[in-house]
Image (tube, rainbow, N blue to C red; front, top):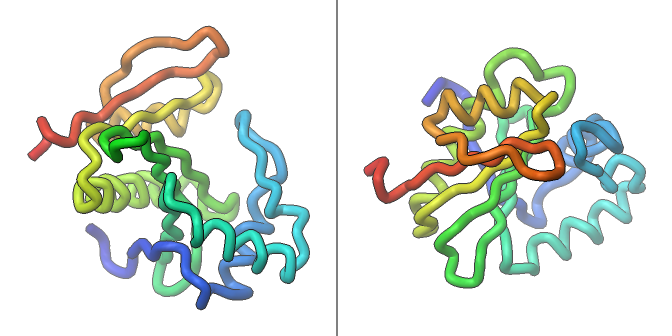
Amino acid sequence: MTEGHYLRQLDDQMGRAEYDMYRAIPAEEVGMENPQHHMTYDEWRDWLAGEIAQNKYVTYIMYLRDYPIGHITIAFDEDIEDGNLSQVVRPVCRGSGLGKIMLKLAIEEARKLGVKKLVGYAREFNVASWKMMEACGFTFIEETYYGSKHYELDLEEEK
């Protein structure tokens, strides 16, 4: 990929830098909610422990030279065949192509996990998100009834 970028799965060694990243992401935007925005550090540590303990999805934080710039989650179906993506980049890092790099890194992680298909949704007004998915090889499937664009990436065809 590019020098200095890497993903790290959530772990209990994360601290203030990651907390500050979550707090920098607005509480509500583009149809998402970020409850961590309003959490104290201790509440965030409890949230982090719960996220690490679950097994229905995996969340990674992307770093640029050890600076956390955003997070991406792959939520699994029961067979870990389909992975539904959600991602966000902290506002100060937007518009620089870092979201696309994070998505490409997550695609590689999904392959390692055995995910066969990635699914993503972007509100039609969130042009950056759907253009990013298209640039990473996702295929537009349909517009949903609630105003989102549905995309898919078949990881088995990509090999």
